[in-house]
Image (cartoon, rainbow, N blue to C red; front, side, top):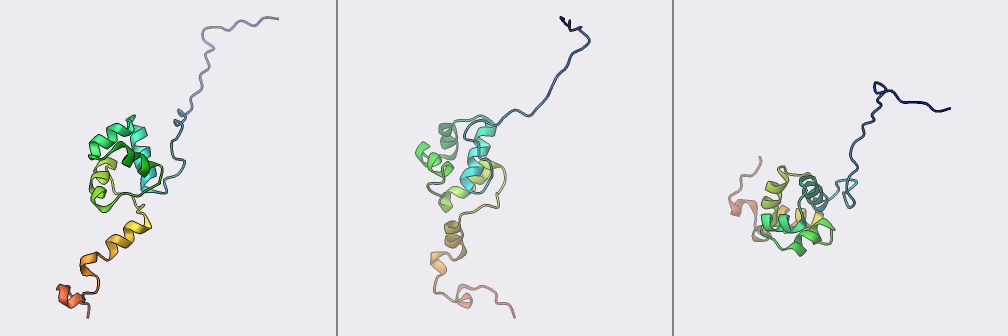
Length: 116
């Protein structure tokens, strides 16, 4: 038996659009944050590289977590991400925690206030 669908019997289903291939499942590294933001904006790696004044290979290496951004890139990356992610690689933490200029120099000699 044939059933005829009447015009007032419309059924619609809504679901979120699936994420594109290569979209990070979780944001664990700074590269994951960069890739997510880039894909959300619908930009190519070359567009982000131009925006950050970096090479396309550099952006690719960050996104694939082959390398982590050097300290000099962090301000530009934060501007691109529009926030400061809590994810900072361990080697970047080590480099920023104790700058080379202060290694081996006492706090009093640097002029830092000491807690009493």
